[in-house]
Each structure stands twice: as structure tokens, then as C-alpha cells.
Image (cartoon, rainbow, N blue to C red; front, side, top):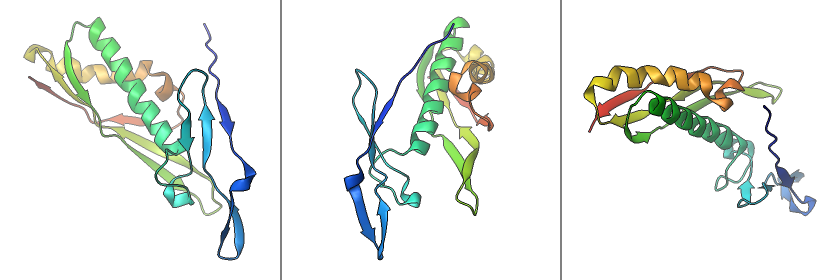
Length: 154
């Protein structure tokens, strides 16, 4: 079974700006996905982008965090674990080479889960690995997605 996803990018060249005598192009643009709000995107601040806008690196990390959480909620529901709260403060490490190329070398997820049954803490922690195996985005990455999970009962 295959699913097709579409995105459109819109950028206008009249956004050219002066910078120390040389010209550079604004990196701000719009991503349009039919039926959804337009995403205002730029490069990261480190790459001369608008720091008030999302950047591709933000969006990649956000996709991983979101996909892992949804996969985790799925495997917990299959295992009869009631999740009461879920939060994560993920980090992604990007290495840039002298020639300007680069890549993510690692993502670390720090999911904090709150459950209702103290007898399920160990299983709840173990299921992060299964969620990672199901996560569409993690399965599409060529870098490790690591988990430092915690679980408590409320």
C-alpha cells in the first residue's frame, strides 16, 4: 500500500537584499499543502535565515517527535497501557562540513510518559523501541534516533 503526499513551495526573487556590498537572496518562503494553513519557512538563523520562522531542521525534528509519539500511543493502546500524559524535549545534532554541506548525525528523544498502572512501567519504557520500529519518519532517516525515556505513575 502506498500513499502520496504533496507539498508546494513558493518563493519570489524580489526578496533580494543587500548585505555588505554583495547580494544574497532571502531564504524566506511558503510551503503550501492543500487544505492546510500555509507554513512560513526560512533557513535557520545560523544560515542567515529569519529566526522567527520555522526552518527545515525544525520541521524534520518536529516530524520525528510527532511520529514517535503517535507510534508510541498506538503500541501502548495495543498493549493495554493507559497513557495520561506524554511530553518530549527532543534534540537533533547537525554537522556542517567546510564545503557547506551537512547532515543530521543523531536525534535524541526524551519522552516523559505518565501512566495510571504502576505494574506497567517497565513495559511502557520498552515500547519506545517498538514505536521507533513503526515510526514512518524514523524509518526514513539515515541517522540514529535514540530514546532517553522516563515513565511515572500519576
